[in-house]
Amino acid sequence: MIWAVILAAGESRRMGTQKLLLPYSGTTVVEAVVRAALDSKADAALVVLGSDRNKVREALRSYPVTFAVNRDFRLGMLSSIQAGFNALPGDAEAAVLLLGDQPAIPSGVIDDLVCNYRENSRGIVIPVYSGRRGHPVLVNTAYKQEILGLDPGVGLRQLVRAHPEDILEVEVSSSAVLKDMDSPEDYRKLASRRR
Image (cartoon, rainbow, N blue to C red; front, side):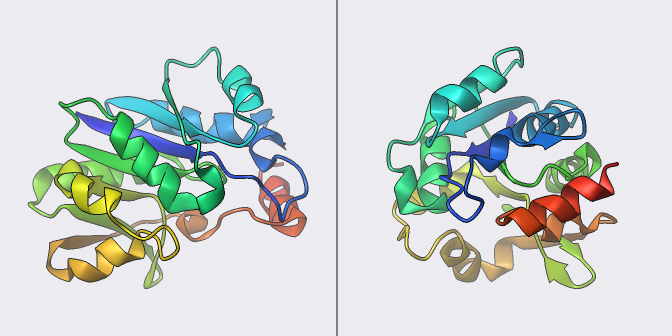
């Protein structure tokens, strides 16, 4: 099985409020990400919670997702990736790592990663737009133990740098893979495009 793992544990310090719960296209930011995951070719979805976890869980109560809690969320994004990999069931083959603050990612981008992964023998699949790598990233669970041993201060790029021969870059048509939402200005730009 290929799981969509939605990283929804951050503190949103630069935003000044929990950005995952901000309104977006008639719903909330995190719901938009979860909907894209559920509409994609991923087989199941896991949401990694941390900061404001009760509020985020409540916002997602009607969605068929599994939850995991990252109690070390203050250590950064890698700690949420590690919590997500730890929570995946034994039959999980790969995880598409979705940022909770990328609500504009279409399900088609996830499909591109899943389909290319299934058609190739590479363990790390990265979307590329105009020559730049973005998110989400698909990672085979064969890397689980290595991911669990990575330094949270450096992040997942350690894995990518260590295995250049196992990377498949997939050209996608959506610039959303390059845009996350850290500041109020980022949010205004993303929200205005959806009107």
